[in-house]
Image (cartoon, rainbow, N blue to C red; front, top):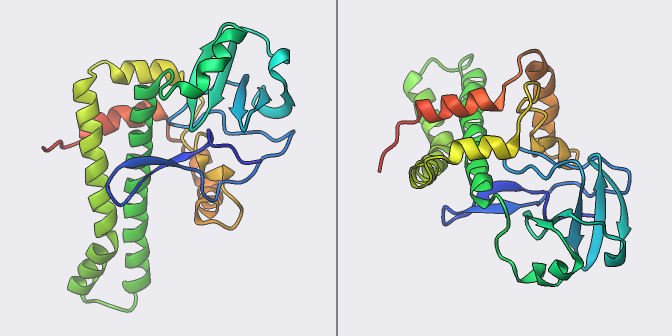
Length: 241
């Protein structure tokens, strides 16, 4: 089974942040599911409403489907592309399809931009290292190396600028958003960005899954913590209109 609420952010051709689940693996009953990433925190116990069915997540595990008559209230429910609500009675269920926004939407938006910034910076650095590694031994033409780096990273740099601008505008419009984001995410002291990465839930053989496997041993010995990274990101951005 594939669920819309498990997704990753990406930029479309118009420079808009969209939610995508392409190449994410399907889940069976008994599987652990991505209940928490850098951009959403559903908790460990909730229900997913999809295709007129309720799927139960218990302790982060997809366990079963139940009918609406079996639901226990209050209930944390997730539906669509990550809309979160706390439902207090059966009468509230009839209106959830009409809702466009749920709880913590701005916090999720900040988290998506945070994730994209981190991902794009990593891709740019990795691309630079790959080019230097591939070409340094066979070429001493530094102009050629610089041109090749510019050529292969320009699109990523342009996307990063878009993300930075959106991040800046969002934090200016909502000055307390960083604190409310951290409250919503409730990162523990031991949670690192590798374990929060959606990449480990990609299908085997995809570039994202391969990257997760390759970096797992490195990040285990030198974890990157989201609170520190977020502070560093905010402090280091050179915002421009």
